[in-house]
Image: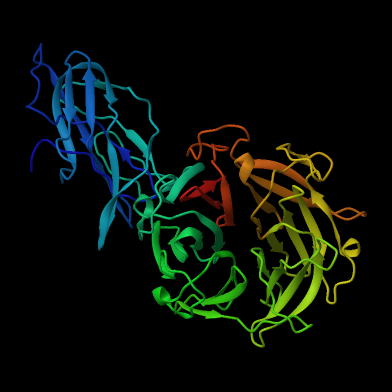
Length: 488
């Protein structure tokens, strides 16, 4: 094995703590006084699932002995670097250009987006005849791995979550349709995200006309239905199916993913990849049902869709409940126009985002619908007054064209606020005169450009359009051409 090695880390959503730098060059430097010690830099960390490898790294060491330790290739298999240095106090600087990779058994190694967490330069002391390890800690995809005690270097079996915003899969700028792991995967304008509660996300990759599956634990992305660039209302299995413009999605407890696809309602059987067009859906009057983008499920698992055809002489739209077995629809409520997202509590309450009025509304739905005013009221946001203010209810809090909305198991709502570049949290407060919501911003900073930028929360987002709650309470966020994870 060459004494020159590259730091290479397997590409996974996790963090590697690299131990001290080791000389990777033309031999060990001589000691001015003859009293020397050893430094050791570990280049590989392992977890039960993955291996991380640091590559293409250059470490500048300054002190009684000055030297530069480098890895000389991007595919070196060296696991550590070693050098002899004169006794004394040193600093070491990791130069730009390093890369972290993740690998797993049976999978190709991929480069992951990573952040250096430790001080740079780092300080350390070399003692006579001793071995010194200088930890360099890296974060990738929100996890941290720690080095062992001085004198030995071992990766901790315990992986601790790093709180903050991290890349989960895709590239924020570069569009594509490639399956892969983490940063090696590519999306083209992912929109709606749905969590199955088992550690998987289903992603509507709208411009690719495909439905993708993302395993959160590994970052692996696979296409389960549709073919990039191929459109149509075509039933089929997996890549043989075709979509026109998939947008809203909801998953029932039987593994059926319902998708609003332009003016059609589609059903994707997740276990088989089979796509079925519920093309014979009719409203009670016998006319064809138009399907808007917003979609949710009621307590029985039946899809609730917005019919984008307004009532005569009105901008009011109708919310329809679709019986997936008989493919018939019934009217259950009236809603205002421009509904971008629907969340339900499973017992007859709807939470609706209205982009054009910049509001979140709460509605009690019960068939047959009667009048909007009897069942719907403003929950949060000032009507026709866009902004980014946090605060209570509909008289202080402001949104700017709110979009996706999701409810967690405790009743808290999370709303994507794309123009503000934020994710908002709404705590619903019941009172005698209907509910109101207390709004706070939990991810992103309104008016701060440059996102998405991973880091400690609130971090910076670009234009988030999709949001889902993961089983551990973290949020998955679709922003640009990538999926991020926000851990609180």
